[in-house]
Length: 619
Ligand SMILES: Cc1cc2nc3c(=O)[nH]c(=O)nc-3n(C[C@H](O)[C@H](O)[C@H](O)COP(=O)(O)OP(=O)(O)OC[C@H]3O[C@@H](n4cnc5c(N)ncnc54)[C@H](O)[C@@H]3O)c2cc1C
Ligand SMILES: *[C@@H]1O[C@H](CO)[C@@H](O)[C@H](O)[C@H]1NC(C)=O
Ligand SMILES: *[C@@H]1O[C@H](CO)[C@@H](O)[C@H](O)[C@H]1NC(C)=O
Ligand SMILES: *[C@@H]1O[C@H](CO)[C@@H](O)[C@H](O)[C@H]1NC(C)=O
Ligand SMILES: *[C@@H]1O[C@H](CO)[C@@H](O)[C@H](O)[C@H]1NC(C)=O
Image (cartoon, rainbow, N blue to C red; front, side, top):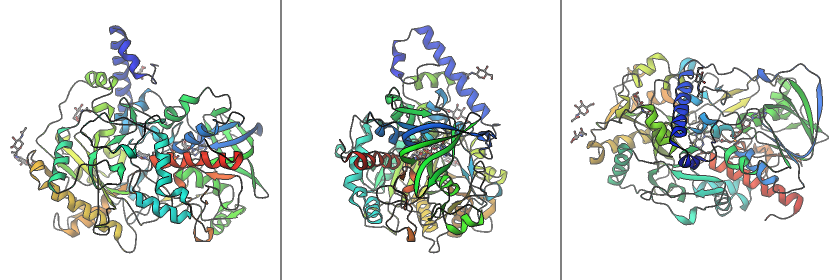
């Protein structure tokens, strides 16, 4: 309704219009928040089913499947070449004024922008959740998961890319090369002058804005001071450092910058770009080892569309393997069990990785976040600041070594600090907590006084899978997250060390000065153990370790398909000349960071790789 692309425009509006805009957003926020309590997430993709006969949709040079974090970048870069025609097929629609508001992070999960996937019932994690099922939200629409994500901009550590380079056997994926691509996308705004940043790691002029939230919460400052007391520096965490910092966010003047707004909106007038929303891809057309096109449904009709050069899959860590499996590209045994003709025997979906996270730490303080009328918050939001300009008050971040990496400078524990108001009553619904878990954990905390610290296992060793439930393309796949299941227990030990680190931070003067006190417990499910004992925490970890919504690696990059690799260093699916993947599926390992920035990097690389293939140059 209002022009969401030019927030500064607001400055020039008259008083009456300003009031109208404030009223509109206040109503919108109330509506979306209220509806979140009853909205039912879909159980499958049946809305896309149509019995109609398939029609021919035409022919394009390139077809990009999925307009998420990776797909939007590829679409942008390919259409820089004027004589290439590019069709982008995306299952959802465009973002709106509600997805723009970062603090609608929780409610937005309960809208048409979330596919609403679930894990299968788990035995090693998510035990405090209903039926031991972990939620797996994924964004649907132009921007993909960036329409609903936490917006934290975090690239991973340089050692991750040294490993990636080895997996790929290609310098293209080494640190110098990926740094070039990170900077190519970036527009860094150093608006929090107190936050240290290292200019050689950042750039301006790219499509993806990176900025800090303002103002800081006193709880964040106390957390940062506590870090200093323990000897941790306040650092630019995107410069390969151990230490803590305010979070760098993909917002622009306090509004969500989803992939659609960042990479599609500025180039939407290009004549060679056709982005078709509400289009659900069900299958690749493959003949004699060549991908000829894709089948999709769109608004009650079924189509087939031809690709003369390439198909680029960017449907995300679940969508991409699902489409491949439905097309006969996957583990032979699995496909045969489902009576799908095997086109290529590859380990598609056999390695689901993630950063698992323990949600069980809340800390009360004697700082009370002021409670003010919604319209005041809206006014601040429209000026780019305040609590509504940040997803769920996720203000602080810290990267630390565990005993497994001590002395190497390589972080494998992350703490995320969700300052006051991080747990709304909606939290139970978001995390599928049982009534008992919710009562033990969050039901009785004083929300404006309490902050949460999430403990994250960065280099998670546990590996899950994604498999088809049936050959019906409208049925959701089976997602077995399998967190904290590695036989060496490295994952659970690392999370336990993260908890111990928080308990040490609680002993600092800085946190004592706000009377920081551990809340959230004891969990009745762990009552057989002495509260706060090691055994208690290991029990609690199995109850409340879920996922940070960072799934990746379901079609990993590598050199040998016999050892599980699905794509080569040029993002090509093994055995196919004209089929690439450009999304988080290709990561060969869980990174010491969040996956959005690296997915954008993969999209940038895909653009250049395709140009190199057909034009022999990149500019
Ligand atoms: C709640 C949440 C919080 C997160 N927080 C952060 C964070 O703070 N920082 C961070 O870095 N990362 C975060 N992430 C993760 C990050 O957003 C993803 O890693 C990233 O968006 C992955 O990009 P992608 O291109 O692989 O997939 P996506 O961005 O998910 O895009 C896939 C696209 O393909 C479409 N699609 C799927 N199947 C089909 C089909 N069959 N036909 C047509 N289209 C299809 C989807 O609708 C979607 O638009 C979060 C994710 C979630 C869900
Ligand atoms: C809020 O919901 C009401 C009732 O459904 C509706 O009339 C109104 O238009 C909605 N407002 C906004 C801004 O979405
Ligand atoms: C913080 O939480 C309190 C209590 O739940 C609520 O009244 C207040 O509006 C919240 N503030 C924000 C900015 O969401
Ligand atoms: C918070 O508690 C500390 C320590 O108990 C005390 O010194 C301080 O004055 C308190 N601050 C407020 C705002 O109540
Ligand atoms: C500090 O917090 C504890 C636990 O919430 C409470 O019992 C105590 O009274 C608080 N002290 C001060 C000085 O606020």
